Image (cartoon, rainbow over all chains, first blue to last red; front, side):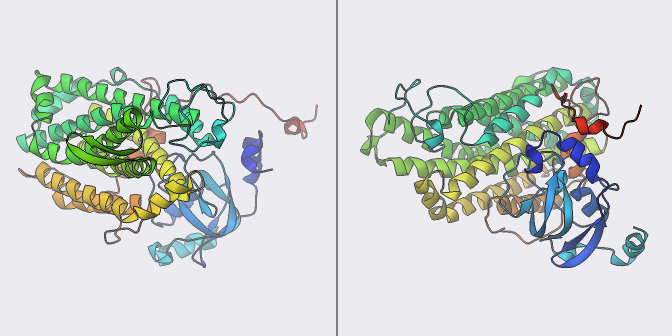
Length: 122
Length: 376
């Protein structure tokens, strides 16, 4: 059953916080480690790594942050309202369900040197 | 298919296309072709607000202290937004409702238009508070050259669709003389006009509004005209939802599964849709020039605003599967994000810190497994 259909998805989300951290890659380049207890959603994690993602409402109803997923799965913390084609996700209200490769240019990722330490700490 | 307010032929609305099928008869929502429209309605209703809830009395003091060229920027934007919402408060109803054939979409269009009327009322609320004679401002809207230039392009698509629909309902298919001009009226022409109209509405809500939003928020970034910014923020939240709905409709149309003819028209009209986006962006850039003709304001000038128009146009074009027209750039107004984020919208006066004021959101379901690790 898809997560959203499950009436207890809130509970599930809670349990998911103890999932193994997921590796987020940008067009094949491993970029960040998503620890479920550290972030509220994927967008927050991307922004913390200074990856440029266009966003507006941050609540899943404007669709501004729509991003293509190359491989991997996401689960939704809040049900999104925006129109999603297969293979698209809304980072503002989802979290990775296992390792994830996003179709975002890795070049938008700035400050590799200063963030290396953060990665090793995680 | 002449329009009837209650079509007596029994039908299954789920088998009708979004537009130009059998007119809606029973407003039932137990079975839906596109559930998303009901979700949009619910979201819009949960966003309900009234302009009177926001105190704009301090804005009068701020406004009087503004230099003349900033007053011009502020008032011009209000005038333009008043025009946009005057159009949006009625046109979706007049133009789309006679064509719609799904009950959930019909109700969404009505809910959508209604929220635009709240926006219109809030402009009066703001203007009444900052100037002694609101007429000077309102009367200028229909004579101001710069506003009219853009108004023509916005109203044109709606007017065309309304004219075609009315002629079709009255005279049926064929070539008819309307206002001395021969026009071909058939279903395909109406669908084409409808598609272009929807694109133009999308542009209105996705690009045109954001130019004024940027200016209002730029004032508030300096801690002036904050009451106004609070209202504009609520408006921006509604517009984000409307914009999502028109993107949805456009995608369903272009997908062709809903109505194959509409899918053909969408691919046929791709260049026209592209041109609507570009023309609107260029008009907005001209508007930026007009706004800053007497001088810039702190934090915003013509150049930055034009860059923002290009940036946002690219993003909106991508959202409806069009190739972006302008050069890729990073967001020239990064602080806009803070104002557009809906969670920080102050909805009710007592809800200063908290996010969206949710109504009826208590979840009473508790799974038994929750208590598994409890020992007594």
